[in-house]
Amino acid sequence: MVGLLDEAEEIEKLKSNRDQNLIVGSCLAVFGNIIISVSLNLQKFVHLRNARKETQSQKHYTKETLWWLGLSLMGLGELFNFTAYGFAPASVVAPLGTTTVVANLFLAAIFLKEKIRPENVFGCALAIIGAFLLVTFSNTSEKVMGSYEIVRSLSQPIFIAYVCVEVVVLAALLILLYCKKVRHVLLYLLISSITASFTVISAKAVSGMIQLSAVGFSQWTKPVLYAMLAVLILTALIQIKFVNMAMKNHDATIVVPVNFVIFTISAILAGIIFYKEFYGMNGMQVTLFLFGCVLSFMAVYFIAVGRTGVSDGQKSDIQSHLVASDLIPSWLLANVNVGQVQPSGFVEHLKNTETDKIPILHAEALETIEELTEGSDKLDGDGDTMSVTSLDMLVDREKMGIGDSTRYGTTSGNTN
Image 1: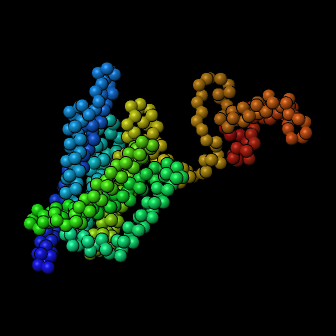
Image 2: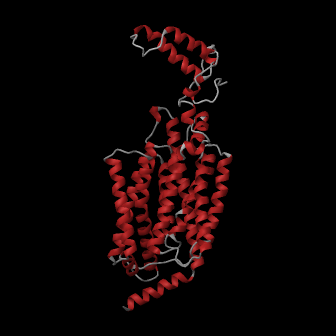
Image 3: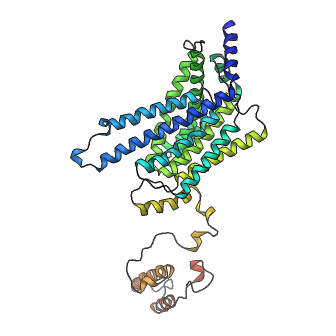
């Protein structure tokens, strides 16, 4: 009992420098994310350099010293992020992941010669404002939990209900993925983010217990420490698997922003439910904190626009225009229903002929009419077909620009 009281007193001492802990945790998260960005660009640089070599002179990337340096830096960055959970709330550390995207924008421009677009710079500005709001209006009453407090929090009814809901949703998503063969990007990322909530809880718990052990209150003999460590490793591996599956089947410009948004929401919910990180915050604090999160989400979207990693500049430009249509349904972006106005598809005019000058709707109609004309002699004369004379008249009407308004969804006969 005396040991528990001493541990509680030490926890209160760790909480006493709340503002200092918040600054330390935020700085650790920012530096860790910058280091991760450097590591990713180093590894990508090795892959690109190796791809430019001739087949005979190519080496496996694991034989490149620079690649191992990048991998080591990634481990160091993740260690910084892990340590940050011991000082700052999870609801602050997770949204600060925008630092990786911002740093990657400039590092890729320096090392990989990628373009920086105006919308990318605008996204960086949003990220800075969002990070400022997150740190300024977060809950400074950080909870550092010992083994006793962690066990007590694990047995709370609200957390048990939270786990049950997440397990049911996770089971439904896995059924859709493996039984129904659904391959939507949200499916992969929702599975990853649900497991990420347990990663955040366990990472913060392990980090806090290590912090207590460092000041003299050993947690190494507590079973809950090793249970949390096992959950941390298992859920981290699951995240890596499903994020990689999403990257394999979908474009990075979709995966990166969507994954960041869902992961951040999941981490904030985990912090609220398990660590009660919003307790004691007034309405203004909560509103501005959530506004900072929204700005961070928007920042990642604008930074990701047009960054497809395609060497062909023209293809990259096309992809940048398709990002919004991939994220948002087309009927929300249009003031009319496009499907009722013009058939979908791409048409290329490669020849300078008279038929190429005919509007696309008329050209399609003419092709259909010509097919009917060619096959008209094979049809029975039972009244269900048009005569050749009628077809000729319809062809003449189409050439003069007089079309069927009801068929093509136009309000006038002449589409020009």
